[in-house]
Length: 163
Image: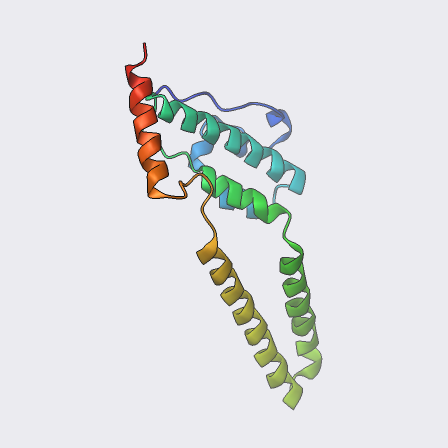
């Protein structure tokens, strides 16, 4: 039996049963973010509850009361960020969807191949931009330097000795 804090129950009564159970750790945050059966508001509430659970688990882990399960806090924060895409995400989606909408009309013409190539190019450009942005981002909750890890370890060791 773990000392894991109980899941938050705020606003759970208006959510589907499979996302209201105490086993929210079995649900991947990314699945919640793309679940077509949930409204945007429901997704936000589920992910908020998952974030609270992950933060409580992280606190318990820091205090030596963990049950060994991962917090998935970073996954939850990433999933939450997808609910409100950035303006550049919307712009790329609009361009790609506009090009895709033009495909049926261009079928059998030279424009069809050009449009397909444009879609591939825009998608490749977006993937490259995301890769560059992701490579420079510091994951949420991660120490920014080795010294930070050492300081955190020392602080946790001191707290274990404190009665």
